[in-house]
Length: 194
Length: 194
DNA sequence: ACGGTACTGAACATGATGTTCAGTACCTCA
DNA sequence: TGAGGTACTGAACATCATGTTCAGTACCGT
View 1: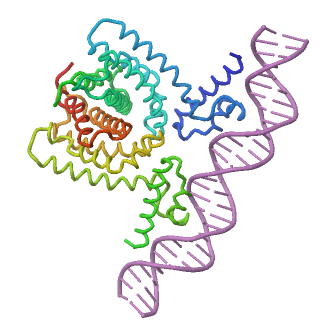
View 2 (view 1 turned 180 degrees about the vertical axis):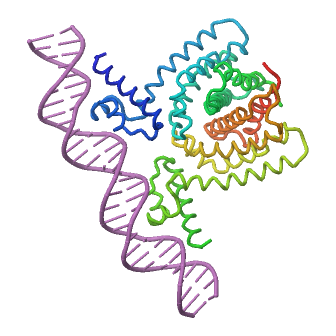
View 3 (view 1 turned 30 degrees about the horizontal axis):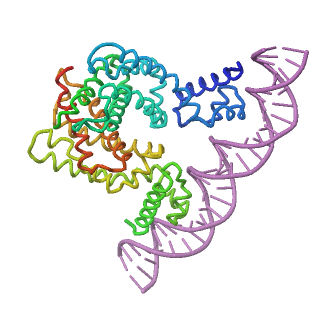
């Protein structure tokens, strides 16, 4: 890829991130990004459709990273209780090491756009995992798979949000443990009616 | 309250709702609302700060409704498994009877603003419930209450979202049962570590 | 060093937001 | 029922963000 293209896109990503930390996603205008990145207006629009497009393209990296962790966990031996949702710890760690960015996102009420994109990424991962747990869509007493996928993703996002609100008094491992303690029993007890 | 004020606010609410159904929340402009409601621009801004303010004021009714159901459930005898989260069925029923509105909200990726407001309303209700379950903040092995609150709200919103996506193949009672089957065990097993 | 591609930057069109204010209509309350 | 107050009107204006266009310039890959 042309070096100029790389440079430009890097500058734009950096600019967006640093601006989000300062003002929150919504408050950032395209003009802000251009000024910070030192990139011409028309240039921006040749690369991205808009602010959100730039954001989404940044989330692709995270997605790849989590996918690797998931694959590793699925390959190893163990019950679902141990190997299931094998990307969750990696996610908590990623959030922790970028917590200034995430704080700018979740605190501000603005970050719902970002979170929506993140949801989509996570839903794919969770669906993968559940497929290995029970490859056939559903046995008679199971819950619909999509319901469970939505449930898990919602729970995960919620715990992360809470954890960030607490300003990381807990380590990533501890937060992950809470998430798993709340969520895994629900998944595994599916077949057992109330 | 001055009858003119009532009329104006009613018209504005109706307009917003019908427009949301047609275009989704984000796509609606203040001007759209004014045209539909037949209300002057300056009038709008004397009543509401903006589009979102109008929306939020509409959610107040729902909040009151759910609170009543919760109070009734808490007053009745029974284990937490039966009386806990006593507003959930009422919520599923409310969503069902306004499903055209909610479909416009959740489908469109736009509705995150609405959902954020709804989250806040639900968090208050859930917190109420959990307080009655264990009035003291936490025994040693319990999870932090806020974590559980976030978890429950996230799960609830997720199940509702999924349910709407399925275009209501299930009755409100069935969807509610799924939610409770996934969530209540997680709450009740809190003290039991993995 | 050449051909091609990417970047520039200013100008423009568009469209939404929110404010102002003098004039008009309507409501409440006595 | 009428007087006084309050709410609504609507047009004009200021502001600001978005997204497009295009001729000119700088830089890259080979």
